[in-house]
Amino acid sequence: MNERPIVIAVTGLNAIDSPRPGVAVIRAIRDGLGRPVRIIGLAYESLEPGIYMDGICDKTYQISYPAAGSEILFNHLHRIHQKEKIDVIIPNFDAELPNFIKIEARLEALGIHSFLPSADMFEARDKLNLYEFGEKHDLLVPKDKIITRVGELNELDDEFGYPFVVKGKFYDAIIAHNVEQAKKAFYQLSAKWGLPLIVQQFIKGTEVNIAILGEGNAISIIPMRKMYITDKGKAWAGITLEDDAMLELAQKFIQATKWRGGCELEIM
Image 1 (cartoon, helix red, strand yellow):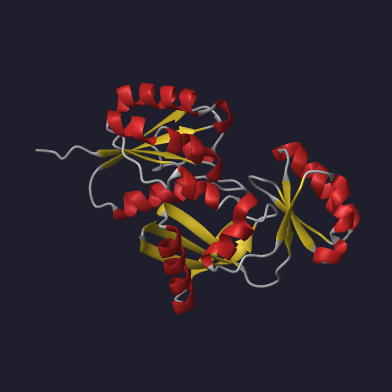
Image 2 (tube, one colour):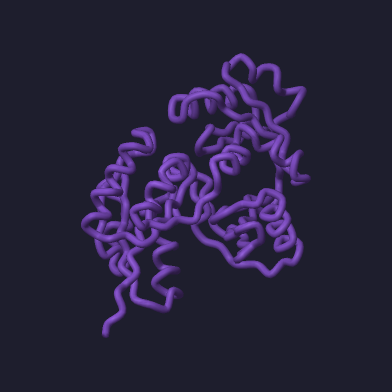
């Protein structure tokens, strides 16, 4: 008797200069699951490359942007589930997680399993709360300041010195070397992501990511050094590292926060 494929729905199918993890997640599932699998791609736009790449998705559906809210997302997923009988869903980027967390119990009632942090966990590590988060859990986090007015940038030279980093509240970061560049970054990022913005102390060094899967303790830890970064500041190529200090840091993060699910630590 043939084994029924496990049906896994995956978001984040973009694979351009600001890539999402979906394509890599799907490749890892197909390579390492060890049983038949049917992959349902969940796309936000019709031109996401993961839709069209050979061997990635068995079927793709378009879903609403996170701004549409959790109720519309649930309705979309419910209709897809009626056709596809989804077993597991894996959302893959920050902005969509609040909606998925809100409907996690309702999806579970339909038979759709997920592995997500709680709303409190997710809120605690938000960029707007990150410095306080580091203080609470004894993690080194660059000093930052939340701003809502462009005029506040004039006051930050003494506090931070140049260069410093101007960050959107969801994504994107621009290094500013003077006040003119900082103001340009303010208008650019606020137009794209809204207010507030984050101004963060600039730390020079080698960029390293630590990918973690945890549930009170770390289930899996993979440190990676970024070898190629796109003009959007996103890692496009890297090499895995064997480093006990990074493994200890990842384990400390998971144990301190009781984080459930996947996450990534960005280290300089």
